[in-house]
Image (cartoon, rainbow, N blue to C red; front, side, top):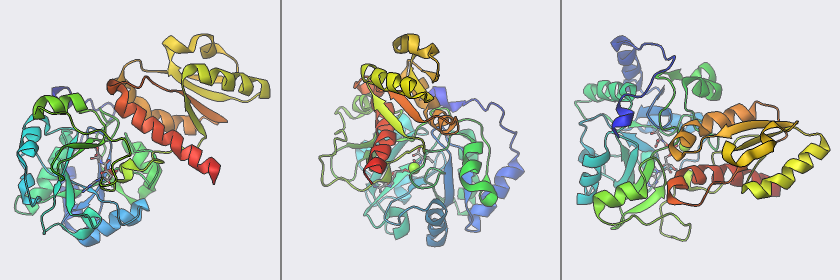
Length: 350
Ligand code: TXA
Ligand code: MG
């Protein structure tokens, strides 16, 4: 994870200690603060305060039965928030924290119900972004070293997660105080691994891969295939999520070509997101707003949400996206693209 320790902060203003303290004071007073992490921006509130957590739900328009992740500073004690702390959890913390891995464990009784959406578990994560770390440390100090910040992604429910401070402002306007820490290095939400049920189960793929987890635990995590009826609820695991507003189709390149021809015949402008190595002559075709997709999964993940937001504003009739290979290295990008496309398929049926 060392590549994320020094995330670039292109164009981000310098934040002073006073800026960080002012934001921590807002959290202390039960207010919300949006802050950068290495994955996406979070909308934070005091995890020990049911009122602050209720504010998060209200701002997002999120149903109250969806749990939020508790964010801890480096050196924070995850066991303070957990009723059980399995050996596997400690191994993963040692290997990947701070970094983009959220662990689900049985929750301690001190955690407000609202944080866990009524479930008996809690998601814990220690982000590696320096601004997140400073904010979390400053807030935790105000709570005798045991402060935690509940934070979902800083977007309205069902929208694409924000990867810049401007994205957060686009979602909430001036209503939310935003700490600007530049563009997020990872670009998609953290990997979520459930350790609360006696075996490791991947709930949401991310930058920390099943392979990374297997290497540390000595066994691969169970993968999310939708067939596990005992799996806990997670909004990121709803089929239709991460939706842009423009209709979106996700198909292998061969299946996109007839749609491109049809759009050309109808005189429609469409966006085409495909790896340049696949797009061929369509990249220059009239009526095609071509976006060369990164050929490599980490770079694709970093650009994905910004790209979807940009294409939403590009005034195209449809967004056509090349479906990527169904291999483990693309699992996280495929997951997010699949949900964005599913959101549109669901709308079409309504
Ligand atoms: O990268 C991230 O994880 C970002 C940054 C801000 O840290 N946060 C994030 O939070 O993506 P959110 O709320 O947008 O997505 C967290 C997912 C949701 O799908 C939620 O339902 C699930 O984690 N989750 C949280 N606590 C859980 C729990 N106790 N059991 C099962 N799922 C849980
Ligand atoms: Mg989210």
